[in-house]
Length: 447
Ligand SMILES: C[S@@+](CC[C@H](N)C(=O)[O-])C[C@H]1O[C@@H](n2cnc3c(N)ncnc32)[C@H](O)[C@@H]1O
Image 1 (cartoon, rainbow, N blue to C red):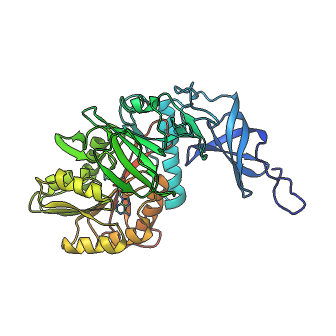
Image 2: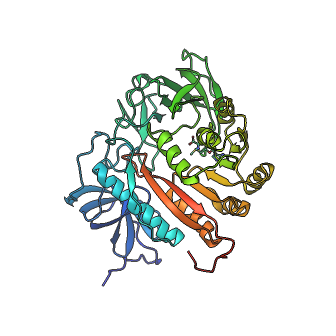
Image 3: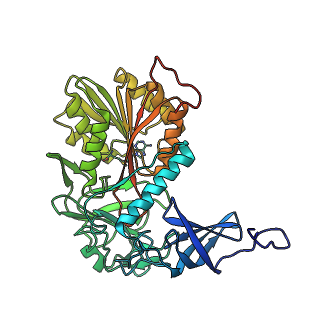
């Protein structure tokens, strides 16, 4: 019989913060941890593997039904456990990685289990997936890292769910020029964050972020691009490029793309080509078709789609970041039937853009981690393209949005998953959605 947690006199469960417990570690869960149960409570355990017996230390107890913990001693290790390649990985240390203690092949199995579980739980679909590797090994792939700056002005990364910064001499996940950036050896007084990004030419750009209203960094070379980027967390930071080219250059399928150094580009060196190829084989675009490319960035997918539909077709992207929109205008200048417009993707802007195209045969969307959401998804289904291809960096958001499509009678076709972020829990999925056949209206529960 499961022992229930002791209760305080007031009836609340006691606070377990700081307690050491010995647990059997259960399955992996979304977010870079595994699930264990102790005295009837769920504990999300980092640095553990399914099937292990571990001593864990509770790091958070919000008083609700679950706690968070780190595995601090492994009594019975999994066969998939390895020595972390980074000396800064581990409980209470750098929070940049979740799976340094797991073989790279097993990391993919864990991510496959998470995608499967999210689709099952949130979309009601029992659909096992494989997670494909992008390139060999799990290190040296990150072409952009945003470092935190500690009180001494040194660069580092934050501890998981903490403001504490672990100073780093190098980051083994970083690509050459990023993980070993010269910026790591330099003090950054008065700066909040420093971002280093490298392109396909091996050129690195360095951006310094300072809080709005503070003095600019002195002696850092104020030339180059300066722009403001909103961030989810306050305070607002202002970026200033301190070194490197004004545009980063990337080659995908013999096309050159240029982006401003602070703008979005796929981080893993193989991701842009692989995602484009998978998306294109899913949409099967024909000459003359009209395409909506939502969350279009600087036009990576827009260009491939435009080449496929040709000048008798049309591709219209929507993108909220003005600098990405201006990069897209340059990247698409030889494809006048394609454009990326500035705007937030909402149900209204999606409908409006499709109606200006005279309808959409194909919709491609590549939203941020929050996903598209019910309203946008409903608008896309109402536009009734012949296919929707959803590129997702969060399997929970994908599963929730797929559920909206299934509820409207759409079908989930192929789903591909990629290990585009080795050593972390992140996984990229590309899912194909097909509308219900007109002659065969959906029945409730017909999936
Ligand atoms: C994952 S990136 C994809 C970009 C592009 N598909 C690529 O692969 O290069 C998502 C993009 O969506 C943009 N974005 C985020 N939220 C948005 C919104 N609500 N409306 C429009 N664009 C948004 C971001 O600025 C970013 O460029």
